[in-house]
Image (cartoon, rainbow, N blue to C red):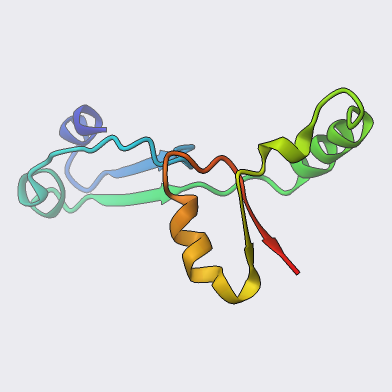
Amino acid sequence: MKVGLQMLRRGGTYLETGNFADTGGTVTLNVHRELAAKNVLLYGNTNHPFDGYYAAFDAMWRNRERFPWDKLITHRFPLEQCEEAMEQAFHPDALKVEFTP
């Protein structure tokens, strides 16, 4: 990301997409020099196309006997603890956080 921002022209747009998991990595940059003084537009995006979910859920359903999908859930929280659940979701040991009724 740092190299990409340094290479970006004045008035350019930088799109960071696909980094939907916090791996603990950081980027050190000079905000004035690499963003403000160059009038850069910086966008972050982790959205997934909605049309991909049907195929994924279908594959999971068809293979439910072969793979223990429930073991992917590492943490369960009641809805009343949604703030704690969201914080937990950013920890490296959380694979999938689930709300339970």
